[in-house]
Length: 432
Picture (tube, rainbow, N blue to C red):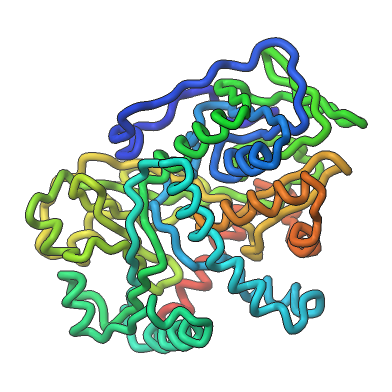
């Protein structure tokens, strides 16, 4: 059965500032295509777009609205952060050998190139800006950033990165919290819902048929599988499941692999002159902690601030109350600032943090599990999945070889394990 109730997008800063919106119809009647994609977030929309660019006919179905899930609610940071790198190195070492570092570097940074090219090619207005700081709160964090800086310079990114000491941080952020940081001009930040909808419109221009309010109730496997919704169906040569943590399809095969962690995000009232005072270079920021804060300015001069992921999978009562102390500690100037929007963002967390790409049958594919690093990674994965569906399996096979860690008893045990794991990481944080 499909998961999410049929509702409109939640009230967020992104939905409130969307401006021109586009609605697509409910799927009715029987359709056919080369490929049907299930899920209207970054992975699904961009897989559909990539396939259409290759000349395939595509139908995309979304249970609610395009960009309804985390693709339209996240912090809007497009960075070279990579979830589960240690696990990827361990599992890929034998397969990739001397090519391992190159492949991981490509995976880390290719998403920025895809997004920038897509925005330029299709004229997507999504408030795209360059500039990001990875901020250190203690000396051990700086040691990690110094290593990252050296690696970036060795890889030819020396013109894109600058190590900042405490004084340099004060030149970039009006905050007492940081002892240093790594400034990166290749990283980006943007309005993710505008990006997702812009990519969906680009896909529609290339002939992709998009349907909203059309939760999938069944996938009938066979030589030509059929995707069934309440009011219609699509038969196709290939099916791609791209619902991440929001769907409950194919639970026998996919159950126990991915679990929700709920993060909170708020935006303040417009800050006026205070926006340039606290963040004069208009940078996105996140810190080096395991459970981190992240923030940036919006196009209309608000502070967008997120953090405090809840690994129980349950919603918080008040993200505004939870995040206000962190906002005021980061920017004392903003003590008492009015918070105008507060919402949740459910991230699909994998126990070993390795993205999950695979096949349930010769013609049914899936991709999921970016563990909070999905804006850039989803665009890379969409390219890999489209290549595979179109017949080029080289990069897909690398991902498909990763062994997922399945939790017995599925959702009942998965989130408690995540909570225990995070408590362990918080304990480690105190000693590093």
